[in-house]
Every structure is written in structure tokens, then in C-alpha cells.
Image (cartoon, rainbow, N blue to C red; front, top):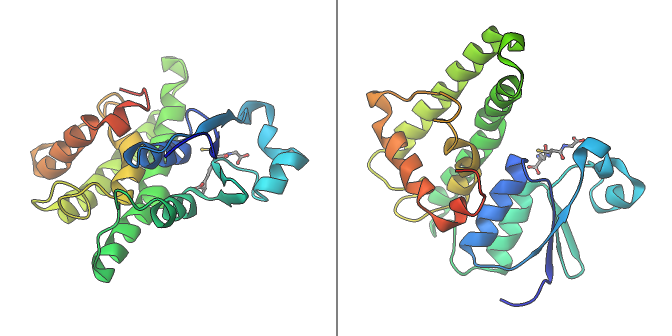
Length: 207
Ligand SMILES: N[C@@H](CCC(=O)N[C@@H](CS)C(=O)NCC(=O)O)C(=O)O
């Protein structure tokens, strides 16, 4: 795939932008990254709101197509650039992968963001109750993932999927966030190690 026909409006630390970057890398797609400075409010300028009325990153531009919402973006990439496919073939399996991606975005990513927010503060200012609460929620999410994985390598079976791409940015940071996963979550622990080894995850530059 050539050139810079794909443009990603991006913020480095955003887990939803990272999810899209993992999918772009899995599909070996070149793209131009356009930095949107969220701290300066660049996402609420009239120009940006014309791209995404929600005023959020990521936004993908593919020639004349403008797509926002990370879940919709990666579905678009799956449709338009199917090599390799990151969804299973069978409808029920596809639905399960999509449910896990949704679970990641709505149940797993928020407590990891809350935890990171606390950990960026000087130690004396951290809210220990919020830290404990996010640890609990993250562990509960990992128990759900562990159950789904069973003996599979990835969330859709033997192949890496869109749901794995959604989890990868934050699941691979759990150690660094001092979230310990005990022996009862062995499938999730091995899955995290498998994801850490993938070039698409390593290129995020988080590990
Ligand atoms: N549901 C959206 C969430 C995107 C999102 O929350 N982006 C955050 C950064 S991680 C953002 O742009 N925040 C800026 C704002 O809300 O003003 C998606 O999946 O793309």
C-alpha cells in the first residue's frame, strides 16, 4: 500500500488512537500522523469539528472519506484493506470479537485511564481509594478476558483480531501500573506476553 493517502488525526497517549495505530500496523498500511494538541483544545476548533462533530481524536481520512470513532475506523480499515483480516469469518465469532472490543472500550479502558491519571500525580497527592477501585475493576475485566480466551492465543481464536488491538495498548501496561494478575488468570497473562511481542504493539513505543 503506498503513499500517505491515509491520514490519522492523533494524540500520542490516547488509547483509542493507539488501537487504530495497532490495526494500521497489522495491515502494514502507511499513514500520515497529524498531531492534535488536546491540551490546547485543537479538537474543539471549527476546522476540527467539521471533521468530527464530537470534537475527539482519532479521525481517519482516506482520500475523501472522513471517519471518526475508533471502532468505526477499524471496521472501515477491515472493509477497505482486508489483508490480513482481523475479524473471524463466522458471524457468531465476529459478533463475539465485536462485543469484546466494546467491553474493552467501555469497561476496561476507563479504569486504566483513571489509574494512570492518579499515577501521574506526585505520590502524596494520589487518591488511594481510586487506585484500589481501578485495580479491582481492571482485575474483573481481566477475569472476563481470561474466561473468553480459554486455551486460545487471541480473542477470536488463533489469529489476532480487532478486539486484541483494542486491549493491547493498556493491557500491555498493566505490569507497569502495578496491577498484579495471579495464577488464576494465566491465560490472560500469556495473552499479554504474546501481544507484547507483536511488532504492531511494539511500534506504539510504550513498552
Ligand atoms: N469513543 C471514542 C473515544 C475517543 C476519545 O475519548 N478521545 C479522547 C482522547 S483519548 C479525546 O479526543 N478527548 C478530547 C475531548 O473530549 O475533548 C473513540 O473510540 O474514538
